[in-house]
Amino acid sequence: MSSVRELDEYFEKLKTDFPIFSERPDLVYLDNAATTQKPLAVIEKLKNFYTETNANVHRAVYRLAEESTMLYEDARKTVADFVGGKATEVVFTKGTTESLNMLAYSLGLSGKYKSFVGPLFEHHSNFVPWQRIAHITGLKFYPVKIHGGELSLEDVEAVVKSCEKPFIFSMTGLTNSLGYRPPFEAIVELVHSADGLFVLDGAQLIPHEAFDFKASGVDFLAFSGHKILGPTGIGVLVGKKELLEQMNPFQYGGEMIDRVGEQETTFAPVPHKFEAGTPNVAGAVGLAEALRYVKNAGFEKITQHIENLTKNAIEKLTDIPGLILYCQKKCHGIISFSHENIHPHDLAELLSRLSGVAVRSGHHCSQQQLKALGVSSLCRASFYLYNTHSDIDKLFYGIKDALRWFS
Ligand code: PLP
Image 1 (spheres, rainbow, N blue to C red):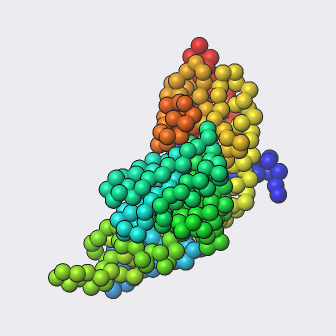
Image 2: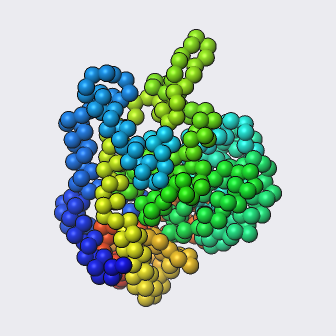
Image 3: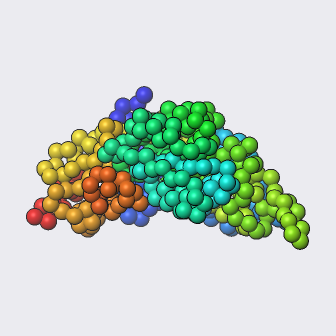
């Protein structure tokens, strides 16, 4: 295990791989839960794809198209290896939101499930699609109450026991609003033993810790490329093969079919039946490069470094009079805060204007979570591998300068 300082120096060196920080030397980027910056390797991969290999995939037999198809399918294999799944279990989507909508529509409209269960702290993309499908289909919708920003296993157990079966349970592995990591491993077993399917929203979890789809036992996993150094517009749904095979496609069109008759159509095998139309080939290739980058950087180091940054930030920010931290027992990589005298939007704007510090402000697409805290808006600082302890100092002094300016 490396020391805090060794890790900081290691990641400070890696920061030079990210061109945005030499283009904008004053930028202190602390909005990584929204999206991450891209290393040159990913940018070059996209450029090379478009300059050297661009062609549609799974359609033509000429050499360029075969090479493009090969890159796309290699990317699928890289994603599968990264999360401990099989290539046939990996569906490329636009992002977590599309992956979760795909599940909500496909599972919800199947008529097989009687109810949906999920905690109130979910990102809207893991709440609203299920709520909407419940309205359309009559599926019963059971939100699980939260305590501050945490979930109690007793509450989950009570809802899981009483809900109509079979059911779908969907939750995040790390909340985007407070950086709380719920004990989802224990809930997977609970859900399975009660005739439920478990969906894990990995949008925040997957960039932050090593994950093994098979060993975890979850039925589905969704995540986005852009939150783990990859391009925007590409994401992943990983699903157990037998479950994907039972599901109907979410979208219909080219390349997802087997045979099209006048009245009936049969579909391509998984995962292709879920990828209607021309996919984001460059995005998939760029995502694979991003995952290789993360793997080479070392996941254990990344997790430890972000843990160190979070601890340092909590210690420093706790010392600012009037600043309220919304960390749960333990926050990972995400710290939400507000000040008793200044609106979060004003604080975020002053942080940017006076100190070049980029933090998010607002409801963080989790209105029910903020309601549970009794607030309508918060500032959020979120860290990723290229952040250093000097960024935490800049956040600390930036908040102090903003408060001084405001007063
Ligand atoms: N789930 C969580 C926990 C998130 O933090 C986000 C985005 O912030 C999403 C889902 C949606 O991800 P995307 O906007 O990439 O589809």
